[in-house]
Length: 344
Image (cartoon, rainbow, N blue to C red; front, top):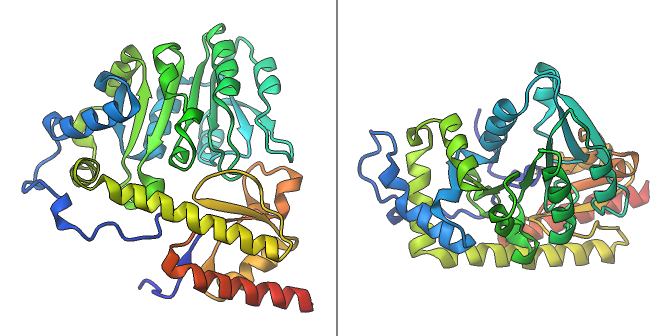
């Protein structure tokens, strides 16, 4: 099956700009062998310095999905409960289907504020883990550090793990990150990734937690050669030699996101508040709207079909922010489809 080069894929929050134009980012001439610990030294040290943690607080993984697989499979047992505000990153369906976990789902209201009080009031003896994304996917809403610490502190009192997924955190101020709290709370695990800053295909992510828990997770993950050596090499060079490339990428996304929101406002289309590499906008017949976009080679995420979507979210569509190069293509197609809907 050949790739449709005209297609604009804005449904998975992937990178939209090719950052792999520099072969110098591949600093190893020995990809016939697996990664070794010494291959990760520079990368781990750079990330640790950036987040003001020890290298011993970090665990490399093949993206956030890999991290969640490790955590759910090893820290939660059948019959134990996971508390999760919904909607959320929809990876957990397979655990509902194939494991005997209990899921306590707390719905977001339409104001998109994290329901802190409701979350901590459902903690019980069977509760093993709390999972939430900040910023949230697919809402884009951001909880404050104080709100998150209330949950972490309440969970610690009952020996409950709290996993905060911060894969979209590059698009908000670091003051919203709870990474600094891993030194204070031994029940906190934070996830970060390079997937949302233009490096989706590398599938390289990080688990950040206290040293004791990090050591245990490394044993669960297995040897470092389970991690893609090329991904390690590219990100290592990117951070240590071309760090401005990632900063420029994040700045461009923020700039185009602002323009896209302004376009929607000019068409009297409501947009959920928040920050990420996507915009969640309100339409009415979302299925028809998305199909009309798809017929014009633009793919977006129809949230009427999103797992555990509350009724109010079923009128929304999530659109990944395109590159500056593709922005006009998106606006042209959106205008055609919106004008068509207006006539009908």
